[in-house]
Image 1 (tube, helix red, strand yellow):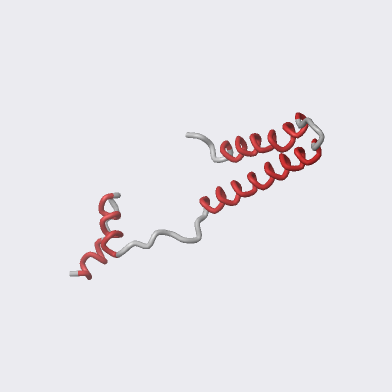
Image 2 (cartoon, rainbow, N blue to C red; image 1 turned 30 degrees about the vertical axis):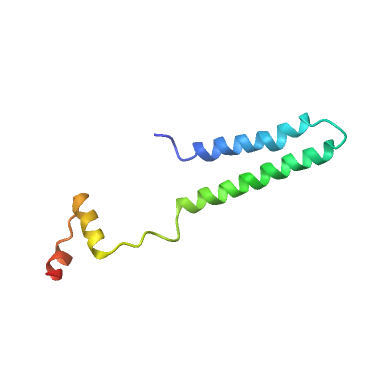
Length: 89
């Protein structure tokens, strides 16, 4: 499998290219505006991606499961919960 640092490294390299290298290719009378737009776009898109990526690493909100759903999952994964099953009957 892919290591956990590969995705952030690849995305960071892509946005670094857009924000650092691409502004050198800007041409025309509004070169400064185009460079500023490229750098700001790269920085804000990278930051937005990083926030979304990091929230998935440790989510604050998990799925809300009923007792029945938990019992089904436990049974399917081979970790049947016996104490709760007996007390439910």
